[in-house]
Image (tube, rainbow, N blue to C red; front, side, top):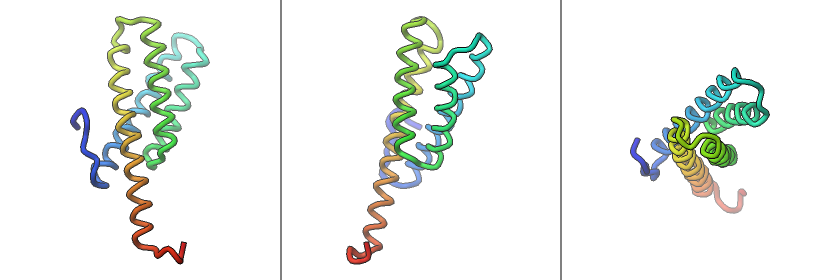
Amino acid sequence: MVIWPELKELGPAIHTARLAAIFAGTLSAFNALSLGDGFNLITVSCCILFGIAAWRIWDVQYPWAVLALILGIVQTVIFVRKDPFSLTTIFMPVAVLLFIHGVRATSMIRNLVIRDFEATHPKEVR
C-alpha cells in the first residue's frame, strides 16, 4: 500500500477499508494491553470503540470509519501531550493516515453501491 492509494475501483477500496479495520482492531488490542498499567476511562472507552469500529469498518460502514478517524486524532493528541518523544507518538499519525484512507474507501464503496443501484433500478421502481 502506498501513502495515498488510488481508490477508483471496488477491489482496492475494499482492501483499503479492511486494512483500516485491521488497524482499528490492533489499536483496540494495544489499548487493552495498556490497561495493565491501571484503570483509565479514556483507555477503556477507546479500547471498546476501536474494537466495535474495527468490526463495523470490516463491514464497510462509513460512520464507524469516521468515528475511528476521530478517535485516532484524539488519541494522537493525548499521546503527544503526555509524552511527545515516545514511540507511540510516532505510531499514531500513521494510524490517523490509515483511518483517513478507511474513510475514503468506505465513502467510495458506498457511492459505488448507490450508483450501481440507481443504474439497475429505474426511477419509477424507487
